[in-house]
Length: 105
Image (cartoon, rainbow, N blue to C red; front, top):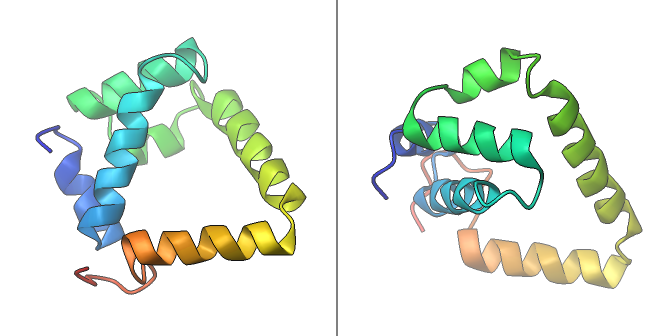
């Protein structure tokens, strides 16, 4: 991994695979597909200029995060039961029981 945020992600998730996936998602956000504000946030997180706790407290990224979460939530609601089950199964296969702290997969 190697980014300043990696240790924070591993501590927060308790699962190295989940932490790696989040870090990969942040690197993807830096490309700007979710907008320039979230790209900036991801760059700042990866570079260690801001912490996840600071992002959560910040009003600078709030509207963009709320909008992104709303889109995700709508996508999730629109899933058929079969799609939801398939995604849950794939997620468990990829990450193990992410709800179990310090679960090494």
